[in-house]
Image 1 (cartoon, helix red, strand yellow):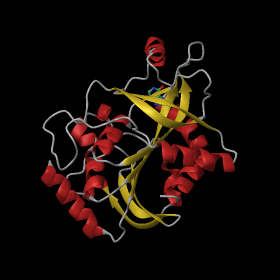
Image 2: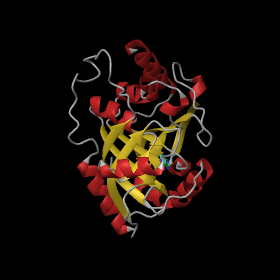
Image 3: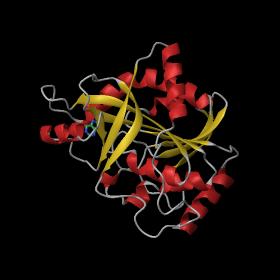
Length: 270
Ligand code: HPA
């Protein structure tokens, strides 16, 4: 695995001139941030050695190098989900490549079901913590010391400093930001009413099918993380209705402009 990570990072270093310090993973329907990137080089995943291929609808697989308001970034348009059948090492391989390329900040976005009764569909939630309910873990197996410690600390999975900056930016633009705990599950089913209730009881504010593996690996790598989630449907008892992937994407697309503004300005501070 170490060789593969190095080969991929070497390929990407040679393919473009940006020296990105910030990695971005663009989630469901949140591709709008792409418009904020002054592009230097775009590389489809199928041209990158050892990169898995993205399969889910609504996710184009490309790595974009460029700048957002002057900050050099490396953005993944399309991520690898556990429910697609990739194992945890594959899901998090791009984060390892980011580590190898010298990335120090990771910004991730996703869509989720709301568990907190104070949240409305369309709300944007800053992730301040997570619960891993994937039933798997990306760091199981031999630990390579050069990648990080055997028993990584997880006391501040999402940077308090970046959360504070995001709130300041949102306040300036009168954008309402919620905050809470993201529960990560494998999917691909959305939750049953009993599962939503369970995830609320254990301390979740929102539930989704991504992000947790990538953030675990980023923290293992010493990368500072910031995450936001768009609440695309409700898992609150009495408000649960039938949902589809298309509806999730529609709601996410509506919240996209506000979310893009906050993230673009946040990235500018990095
Ligand atoms: N559950 C899990 N993942 C999701 C949801 C949900 O309700 N909405 C968007 N992604």
